[in-house]
Image (cartoon, rainbow, N blue to C red; front, side):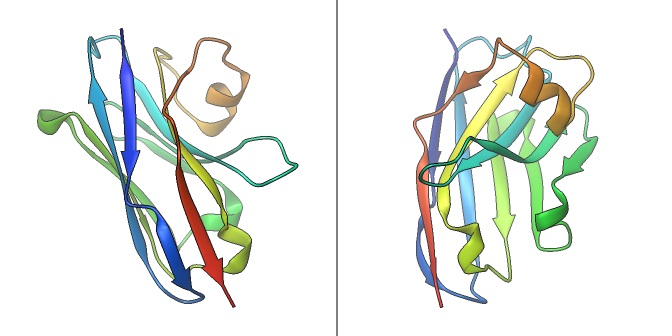
Length: 126
């Protein structure tokens, strides 16, 4: 069974930075697509960024130029570097994995077979 464990969240002031981590456990050979979703209270989860196993990335317009998704396949670890954080970035951030061959925020959003981590809270104050 695939398990995803996020860490690195916290509380920062606007303009600050955080780096999120996602450790992947279990059989991940079929998990070609990884990503980060976030969910604010009262809202549906929204895709933030995705990355194919071999490097292709996709970002939500709201985070382009500020967030960077990356991975270390040897360590089975996914990262999200978040710079220039804004109060609107406040949310629970989830690591997500799927076996999609075509990897993007759109394909991950429409997939019904995603694996989710437990989430890590990011709070950005003004």
